[in-house]
Length: 220
Image 1 (tube, one colour):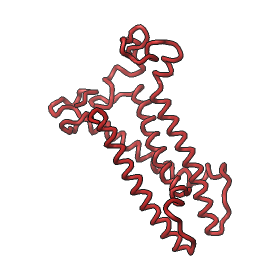
Image 2: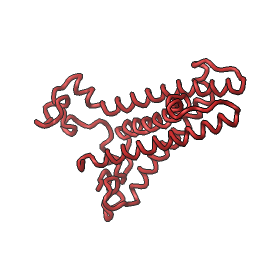
Image 3: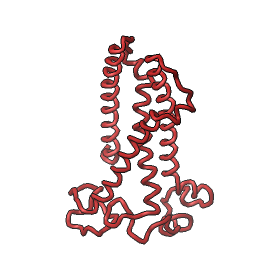
């Protein structure tokens, strides 16, 4: 429990906030239904609705996009003085020796870091690949549920529904996506630059309080 406490704490907060969102969203949805003279949903029916699915998926996809972008861009770019960056001059994928790949791997290195070939190449990029998969998958879910929710709203106002392909070019879909993307990019940029000059004693995301501003990639 202690060794995994940080992950468990965030998962606990995630579950609590997801439940809170579901309850609040259910009440708001039923309030809107009553305002338009339509029938309300039970809580379980709301959980399976396009409205709830789209709201959840649009947040998830932007979070996974944030980490995918950060993982990729931190390979090729640096921010001097940030705890979230490599030192200037270390841009790129680094050498096999620095990455402990193949003959440079130790006995307790992961198997696929030691075997070489395609498996090592795949494992070397596995974090970015998995995060990108979750981003694209959750974005797909958002697009489908967003399309269903959009057409439900269109029908409630006696307007013409859109085909799925037409919805992908609609302002509703891109507004749902871009309003989250811009906030995620701002959050990452803020962390990168704030960790240069500001400190939080005891946090791995901060340099030691007395560490010089120019020190890069040092946490704790």
